[in-house]
Image 1 (cartoon, rainbow, N blue to C red):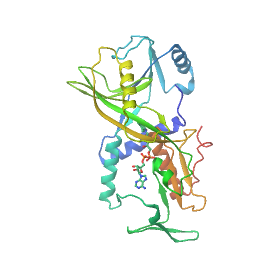
Image 2: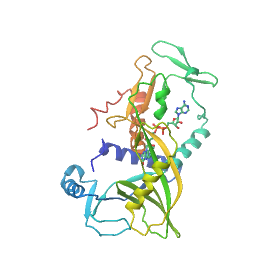
Image 3: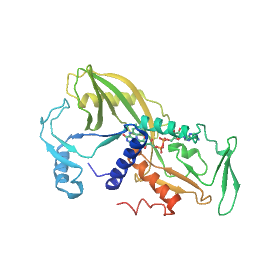
Image 4: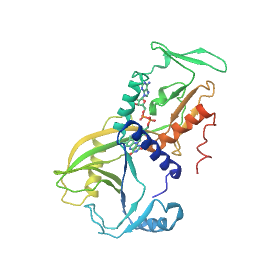
Length: 305
Ligand SMILES: Cc1cc2nc3c(=O)[nH]c(=O)nc-3n(C[C@H](O)[C@H](O)[C@H](O)COP(=O)(O)OP(=O)(O)OC[C@H]3O[C@@H](n4cnc5c(N)ncnc54)[C@H](O)[C@@H]3O)c2cc1C
């Protein structure tokens, strides 16, 4: 239980960002999310007791619950702590909404980017880039390619570490589970209650040096074991979806905004790791500040502590 990097800056900015899009485009994207972390050993209990007295954690850690307090069907031999200020964003809805918005504005093209088609048309202090085959010209190009940046010769040296993750969506018949995240070694996100039971996601695995990005049977096994350890018996569940992806992480978990050393009009935004939803608003604001207000790009090691 350690405070995330720059959390005091990231959370309010992210909330403001998603809520302003909700308001502008008339969609519900952002939701508060109760988070309860169950202790797995005595060290967890002691750490939570220290955190609750630490002013830096004041806004994030509230009550400590004894074993068996406020039961929710999670096996609870050692007690738990409530984490404040959790939130979630409906990312598929967010992406679809923006996609439609930009299509309507006539500024969205869906195509595979081929590096060979990016041609520098004018050199000098105000270079101009053109993209062959499409009627496109740009003074600046920003690459947001996740792990595929490593296939882009302009940014192939970004210090990215690909970490694969798998997630299961499960249906728990006849079980009531209030909306929220229940964390015990892995997180269980209860996102919908139906008359027949609860719908949840359990995740995620962390796998380095993984050649395949596709869902793996081994990861599914780990996740179902975690589900069985997390919820009290008797447990019935049905896996209804198994998904996987690659996190573009960095060694120090800081994101990256990189300006190409030889082509200063090319940029890469990357290194969002496991925290795309909270980091993206900060990164887009930093880019806008740079392009529109000529502010320097942030130094993520120095500017945010
Ligand atoms: C299992 C798992 C669970 C996660 N859980 C969370 C979570 O709970 N909260 C959270 O905030 N984050 C979570 N993340 C992390 C989040 O998904 C990432 O931080 C985020 O997706 C990174 O965004 P990105 O745009 O940098 O990269 P990506 O999401 O990888 O997007 C890059 C896009 O660029 C496209 N692209 C690349 N090259 C080309 C090309 N040449 N032509 C056309 N398109 C191209 C790719 O197809 C892709 O669509 C999770 C990740 C995983 C794997």
